[in-house]
Image: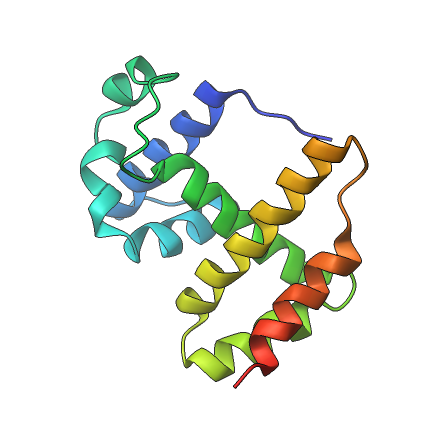
Length: 144
């Protein structure tokens, strides 16, 4: 399993932003990151300054989103859907995206489910419950 450091994650997203902005060739994962970055212009200033992003590590601001965590969650959900792992997540996300008329909006709802699953796993000391996670996304997709 690949476990990048916080600095690695920041370098990756800042690099993808720079390449995308300048129209440079990108690796497939960078292309996916760029696609999500384009949906979040509110993060562009932070992504444009790698040195500032590295200096800001560990300085949590409870009043705003962490762009690196947020974009990482977009990538995680995209990867989960691409391999349908946990089983059923692809269909649940697709249904939610259809209901919301937006894959981006659906991802933001799925992030809440993913965050809850990870929080509950950490709190209980048990592995993440993928079945409960998929069920929660499905509930959101089928709720009126």
